[in-house]
Length: 283
Length: 330
Image (cartoon, rainbow over all chains, first blue to last red):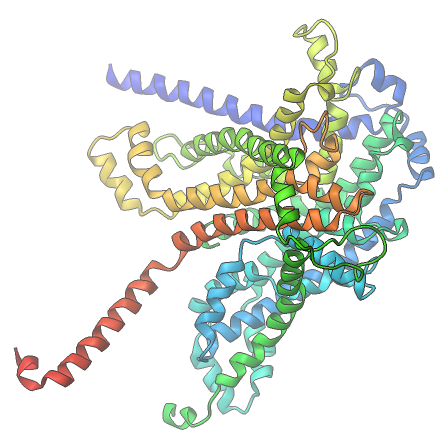
C-alpha cells in the first residue's frame, strides 16, 4: 500500500515539476519566437494578429525600411566588437597578472592590497560616472573607445576570481625550476603561468565580453556621435520615432542584434553555465 | 636549493606586476570617485565645460536639495519597490527549481536543457530585451493584448503603458525574467557544495524531501543566499537599461529609477552635473554599505582563524620567553 502511495506521489511530483519547467521554457522562448516570426511579417499583418507562428513574406521590405532610417546593425556590431575584444583582453591579461603578483610573491603590501580589491569588488563604475564623464570631457576622450576599454585593466572581480583559481593550481616548484633554468619573472608569467590559467581565463573572458557587449549606460554618456554608436545604442534607436509604426522592422532590428549572441550562447552554453556556477560559489 | 634561491629577493616583482592594476585603478576608478564626490559640493552645471565651477558657500546645499527632491525620493522608492517585486518571486522560483534539480529521490531529466533555456534571457542585451517587451506589451495590437483578447481573458486591449502599477510590474517582471535562471544556477552550485554525507544521514533517519530541503539545504545555503541577495540588490540599485528604454521612467515617473534620474539630471538636456553627482554619491554610500555587509560575510573565515591562532602562538611564545623556563615545563 505504502509503495503504491509513494509511486503515486512520485508520479504527481513529476507531472507538476515537468509542467512547471515546460511553462518556464515557453516563457523564456516565447518572446524570441514572436520576435523572429514577426520580423518576417508586415505591419498590417502584425496589427491584425500579433501572435503567429507562421512566417510572413515581408522580410525584405522590413529590411529595406530598417536600413533606410539610421539603424546600422553592422556598424554597431563592429564598434561593440572593438570595445569588447579590447576590454576583454585588458581585463583577462592584467587581472591574471595582478593575481600572479598576489599569489606568487611575498611582499609587504600584499595583504592590504588584496583587502582593497575585496572592498571595491562590488562598487559599480556607474555610480561614479559623473566624475568619470567630466574627467574624460576634460582630456577630450569623449566619443572615443579608450575610456570604454582601458578601465578593464583594473577589474577587481576578475582578480579575485583568478586568485582563487591560482592558489591551488599553480605549484611554486615550477616557478623555482624555471628560475633555475634562467627564465626572467616576466617570461615565467607569459610562458608558464598564462598557459596554465587558460581555463579560468576563458571563463572570465566570456563574462567580461558579454558584460562589455551588453552595457548601455557608459557608452550612452560617452559616445554621442551616432557614427560611433555601439550595438546597445543602435538598439535604442529602434525606440525612436523613425520606427514608430514599422512593427515588422523593429522586430527584425531586434532579431539582428540578438543573432550573434544566441549563436555564441548555444555554442558556449556549457562553459557559460559552468562559469556562472563557479562564480557564484567563489565570488 | 631553497637557501640558495632565498638570497635573491623576488618581492619587488609583486609590486611590479601590480602596477598596471594600480595605475588603471587610480585613474579610472579612484580619481572619478573623488571627482564625483567633489562635484556634489560645487555649482558645476551647464554646457560651458567642466572648468568653470566653484565650491558653494553652503557645501551641503546640493546634497540637501537632492535628498529633499521629490523626484529623487520617488526614484529611490521606485528602485527599491521594483527590486523587491522582482527579487521575491525570483528567489522563490529559483529555490523551488533548485530543490527539484538537486533532489536525490526524484531525478528530473533534461536538467541541462532547462538550465540552458532558463539562463538564456540573462545573456541577451538588456537594451534589446527592454524594446522587445515594449513591443510585446504595446497597445492596442501587441502580442500580449492579442493573447488576452483571443483567449477571452479580456474583452478589449489594455493600455499597459498608461497604468503606473502595470508599468512597474512589467519592469519587475522583465528583471525577474532575465535573472531567475542565473540565481537558480548559483543556488544549485551552492547545494552541490554541501557535503553529501548530511543528506545521506537525513535519508537514513527517514526525512522526506520537504524536511530535507528546509532543515538541511536552506540552513547550509545561508551564505550563498546572502551573496545572491546582496549582488541582486546592488544590481537592482543600478537598474538603468530596462526602465530607461521601456518607458523612459514613465508613465508619470512610475518606473523612474535612481540611475535614470541621475542620467536625466546630467545628460538629457539639463546638464545639472552637481545634482547628478550628489545623487550618485548617495547611491554610492548605499551600495558601499551593502557591499560592506557582504565583505564581512564572505571574508575567508579559515584564514582569520589561522591568523588569530598565529597571533596567539606568538604571544604565548613571548610570554614564555619572558617568564622563564619553569612555566614552559608545566
